[in-house]
Length: 260
Ligand code: SF4
Image 1 (cartoon, rainbow, N blue to C red):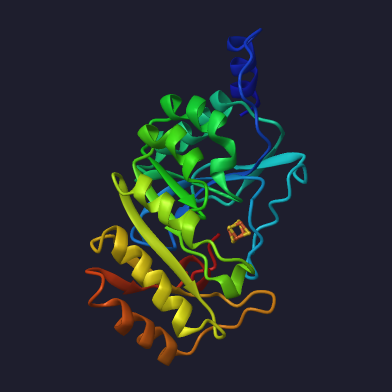
Image 2 (cartoon, helix red, strand yellow; image 1 turned 180 degrees about the horizontal axis):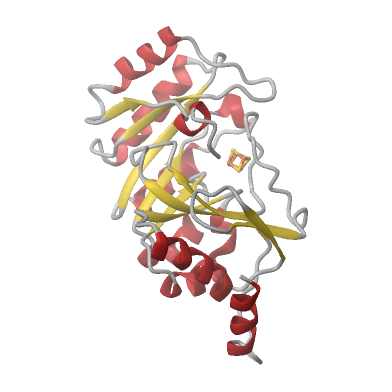
């Protein structure tokens, strides 16, 4: 891998390209959403514009001096590469995974990947995998900048009780922009989530396009978030079936398997 870095540094000599501090690059089984079970590469960015009760990622900007890069896909053996990285360096690592094992997509995750649109713009043409954007669905104007480069959008709708603010307007704008892509919405539900806020989320999706798939995800307990009852998940699905055409309940399967 160091040879790869040396080669890239030589190739980029003198060029001013975007660099970012990356948390990790690895290969795993997608554990959430519409494409659960597919083999994907993952690129985790620092930084987020929200602060969710159940967040399980240490994404503070500047807190990762090194990027953890998995040596071979699925090996769990990692190298620590000094940050920041160039798009070309990241692409080399991801393409190396894809050369060894077929992957469905490169999942851009975080943190909030849309805080890094310049980096994504430079990365996209270098990576030999379709891009899946995992986003909190609040930064519509930033999505516009990279929309042509993205194949799949996994967008959250955040319930006010879990993020401490109402984001209905931002989510609505975002969905209108994202709907031209392969878009699905993830709604994380915890024990204290109210049926009125769940209902509001369902109505918002239906008002944009009732064929957008909705994944209801029971929260994996973290911090003071507690898992919802099975009854609440059943109730939420009943509420959504009707207004929406495709509604599934899927917990985080990678957690069950002890995967990242
Ligand atoms: S949007 Fe995602 S990364 Fe940001 S705080 Fe919420 S759970 Fe964490």
